[in-house]
Image 1: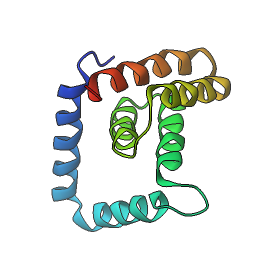
Image 2: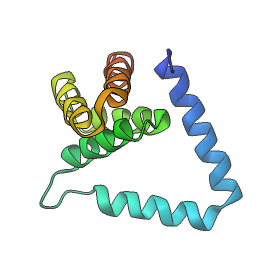
Image 3: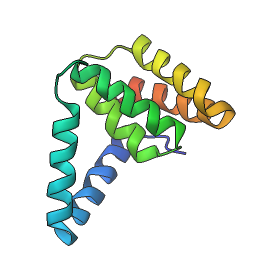
Image 4: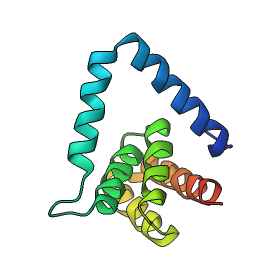
Length: 113
């Protein structure tokens, strides 16, 4: 498990950059999908980031947790909202999601400071 979320954020970004160089067309399309799906609509962008964070927790994706926690912070998410997001993920993902939900709170604490 990740212990230093700020350092891990650099790794996540570096890995994404490598993949972007290796598969630029696919990654441009994926980035476009993320931008389209994540923009304000019936749900605001912050809510959508929290939804993405819940999925990242439920599927045990540390990179997803880090990325979407950072994005949620940028969109104004609070620690309490991240905690409730983790609670919903735990409802759907059980005990393993609880471990990754705690990871999301650690990520929030480190990345928001």
